[in-house]
Length: 253
Image (cartoon, rainbow, N blue to C red; front, side, top):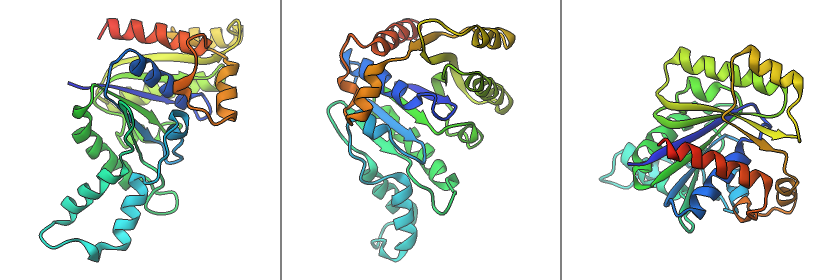
């Protein structure tokens, strides 16, 4: 049975780097194979993992809609589309990646999201773990892309806006009655000490972060140099923090 992890939060809060570090931990521990899912229309998880994404769910659907007449005889439209979707899987050593990519038209991601969810549900049981990096904000929740998840990490950066977005995400999950096994809040890019204003904001909403991830210059350096976060050294402060988080989470699995 696959164990599914999803990451949600405000844009710029470090969701993609957090997802990458979780994948790094799982891979180093031999908890493989891993399915990495980039459910963001502005797909960049592959870059953080050092994987080249040539095709996405969105691009395949767009090409399919433009060329419906090329469906081979004997195949239904649905069967042919499912066959083509497998071309979006980027395979690597113990980590495979699929990306949603752009939508069917300007600003439209609804159909790719629907297809992605169905595809993931069928695909993830071939993997020990699935890690899903979601788009910014809360729209993906209303589309129910983030559902049937064992562990949901709501990530906030070290800002009041980030915390308030996290609160709204938590509230929306409850309103939509999404199926989430367990929910944890992570405060990312924390300096040496957490600011008192942020601590008060968390207290006001009754939120006790499961973990904090320190601001890590090595992540910034790897990003600038276009290096995979999977290759970050064990001495990285963020790597050490995510290691502690995952050891705690998996001990309660």
